Amino acid sequence: MSDLTRKSTTFHMIGGNLSIDFANHMLRLDHYSTAGDQFTIVLTWMEQAGLISNEQVQRYFFLNDNEPELVRMFLQNVIRLRVTVYNIFLALTQGNSPRQEDLGVLNEYVKDCYGHLTIADSTKGFVWQWVEERTVDDCLRPIVRSAAELLTSELLSRVRLCPGEHCGWLFLDTTKNRSRKWCDMKDCGNVVKARNYRKRHNSE
Image 1 (cartoon, rainbow, N blue to C red):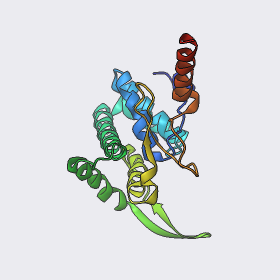
Image 2: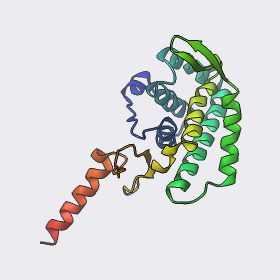
Image 3: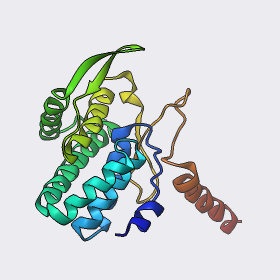
């Protein structure tokens, strides 16, 4: 995948939460057959999500040429985290408890994640600060933290599954009256509106 293609790929962050956007968008990894293309998609998403800079993207691109085994292991890690996060939130939207296996995997990530956070003094007071990033896997930790904080917050009951046909995306309903129904009204919402419109007119 060329750098031009990377720059023309736009991810719409409509999940309302970093970990949910990650789980949604990484579903598209299955559409790419090579590790190089998959790696490019992950880096592009991370850049657009504000997790890494363009300078970091360019630096990590060298891994694909020089450290293919590291890239392969990173992609396995991405898929494992994506499946875990998605399965946990999907179960909750369906009124079920997450599988203990999924919670166990997430807790592995959580232990690693919070072991790389420190408390730092700033002009705005004390803040959480990440230990300096050294590997591409470090970039996954904010996603883990996002999932952990959502799971332990009052917002958890607002996680929804889009009812759009063949969609499967999750989103966080932050509307005041909890009225959000679709991942994106301009996408799944309009498809259903158009279908219902045709049904009404065909029955007349």
